[in-house]
Length: 153
Image: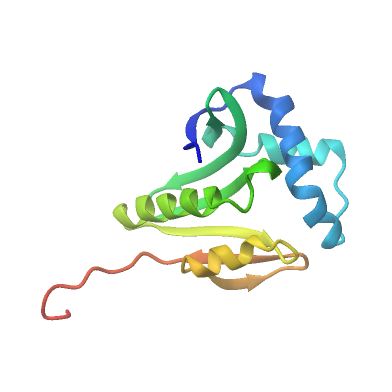
């Protein structure tokens, strides 16, 4: 299993990112009864683009991680892996690392997941809980763990 590396996304990555979005999200969108136009897919890719990181394996782009790190509240905007890498633990490893970074910064993590997306189970295993329900998605949050001293205070 080759490790994943990250690099900042550039405008040259847009064709890859739009294809990745189709490959990874269309089944979940369809199962949720959501039909997105090409323009809506592109707008989702462009949202918070300054926070986008391309996940690579060797020199090949294989995914996207988009996290807005804002003070004590971080938002996981998008995490997508090429279908050929799904189910191999890469996503869980990536999310565990993000959770660790948020914990070190004493920041909560928030995200939105489509109701039909099985990734919700991964998020729950990592300590995220549903805090709101929308028509097609759950809003989830993972609060920072408060470190306690030896006396438990």
